[in-house]
Image (cartoon, rainbow, N blue to C red; front, side):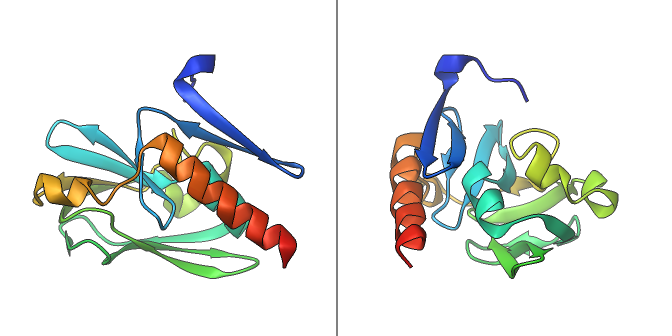
Length: 152
């Protein structure tokens, strides 16, 4: 996905560079959410995908799966870790990204575009959206986490 220079925030920590599109919302677990009518498209943020390393496998919950916030929408396996991705919203998965079955590395290559994970029909209230962070708040959380990792 192409972004204009002013439509995203960037963070540099040590030698790492992270991008945060302003038009998205983010969960504390590192997932991004893009509203598309009464549905949302969900993916792994640039920061989260870089933090976890090269993705070897993506295991996605099937279409039709009902989700509450915190339920696993997907899991990823990298050379470093296995990570459960908790849904940031309440709803039902209507579509998963079929390309990730054959090419999970799309999450690393294009996290805000071709590397999306799922589309969810939202069933929750706007209260669920209140649990999501704007780009500025998520950038600050990412900065704190990245700096803490450099210290350890």
